[in-house]
Image (cartoon, rainbow, N blue to C red; front, side):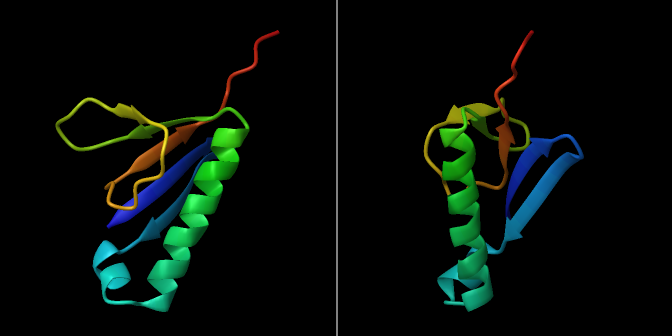
Length: 81
């Protein structure tokens, strides 16, 4: 199961998809991946940083969406003042 998590004022918003269903051609799963790709690109364009998170490993910064990632965490740009 893949998941895109976007940090926000509400905590975090999540979008999940099942890679196995994507491979089987499930339209709902494919739509979820396309939506995750769209959100990833939109948030990166706003300056967000993305991390691939895997159990037992350090988080790794990524610049491209990876539908095979178990979890991607998007952290918005922090603006100081």
